[in-house]
Length: 139
Image (cartoon, rainbow, N blue to C red; front, side):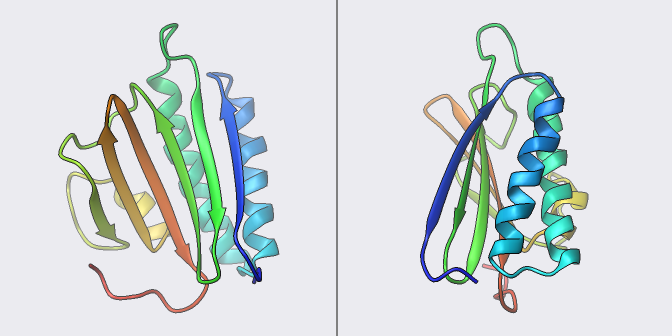
């Protein structure tokens, strides 16, 4: 695990080749933080699903998705932001992994500990959270 917080910010366009490169960065940071192979690959696969969904919403008006990778002492967060990316329009929502909820992609929620959705000021985001230790109860 890291002893402090790190922050990585990337932007990518509709070229799907960027997805595998950013997935490699996500998985590298997860490995550096001490996540095992299965957890690291699950986080990478969840990231890839979210990124592919973002690409379908890109347009000439909004040609880029923004990715923020943050690690903390207890968790890693990967956030994807885009002005036209679809997400619930009712502010922040938290879903604990594995909780059945028809409005969320169960494939993603099974791969990470939490999925946070937010839509504010014309920008939507999805944040994937993976804890380094036992995941906390759903909030």
